[in-house]
Image (cartoon, rainbow, N blue to C red):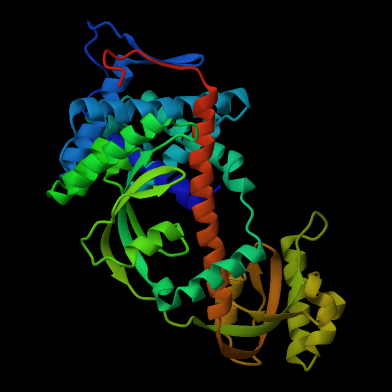
Amino acid sequence: MSPKFLATRFLYAAFLAITFSTALHAEESKIDRIVAVVDQGVITENELNDRIRIVTTQLEKQGNPLPPQAVLQKQILERLINDRLQLQYAAQTGLRVDDAQLDKTVERIADQNKMSVPDFRQALAAEGIGYRKFREDIRNEIILARLREREVDNKINITEAEIDNYFTTQSSQNNEAKDEYEISHILIRTREDSSPEDLQRLRTKAEQALKQLQTGTPFSQVSASFSDAPNALEGGALGWKNSGQIPALFTDALKQLQPGQLTPILRSPNGFHILKLTNRRGGSSPTVIQQTHARHILIKLSEVVSESDAKHRMDDIKERLDNGGNFADLARQYSEDGSASNGGDLGWLNPGDTVPEFEKAMNELKDNEISQPIRTPFGWHIIQVLERRNQDMSKESARLKARQEIRTRKADEAYQDWVRELRDRAFVEIRLEDKY
């Protein structure tokens, strides 16, 4: 699972819960009617209204104008339906989060808010949020993140040919490919089986959105009112992206713009798009890092080798080294690492290649200096630094960055396709008075 993705969802859920919630339930006396049937489950009016209150307060806190109530209701109900379908699928396929895992996550959220768990519960109560309801919301967020990881992220493969093609495309676009764009996005989604009449209706909807933007309506408001993108209610902002992270269709349109300008309506297989360029900046400088050529001797701990035994053996080896012993010979004789046959030689190491305890001790050594025995999670080590150099890692770094960018783009597209397929296979009945 992507830690970044999961942490973002946790913090977002906690942030909404603490900052934006205004009530637990609708009036008890009001009948809680069903507003949508979602396969084996239902969404009730109280659920919908509670979520609308949360999102409304969020938009007001951010200073974003509210879309019309009917539009906001539609956006939120669609999100609830998609989440409910995914949670049902997770339950059917045995994906669950037990209470012990949930307790650890809640502890982490409380710690991120600089509170103990009891203080965190009091803070939730002060905002009118039931602790049990909060826990279940967080449980669902974990399940959704793990479901995406299992069904989409883990199935994304990036080939070396794709990375080569990425650089070929960038090269063909000259220096413009190194530009980064801060953008916002509106999507009017179309279906593969949309009729010509539906396509024209959706095209008209996109034209209405563009007209509102051109007459000065804030992008965040138009996004909330028109967009079918997952972040529509958050204003459609995508942050900084470079050409490798967005379709060529977008890049070709964006490089013609100045900050503050809008693209025309763009057509892709997913639908109609409108982009706003907020800002742009140039490419990055070469990546030069310090590499360390080191070797080591490792004595591991085991059921038959205690902490004191391993340390005593390592002290004996260190004494022999201090008295002129050959490091490579002693590594071949005593080291329990895979590098032993090479005299303990680890080759050139980049920052982050070793565990923190090892790297900290290594960084404190001068060239040819031998460390005292140090403890890491792997056991006891003695380290020798042979030499250091500054190495331009721009090519390696660029390929790693390209791989990450291609993965992010493919995963986002695959996830949206997967959710749409899940929705197409499901039985969904909207029971709002206005079924839009």
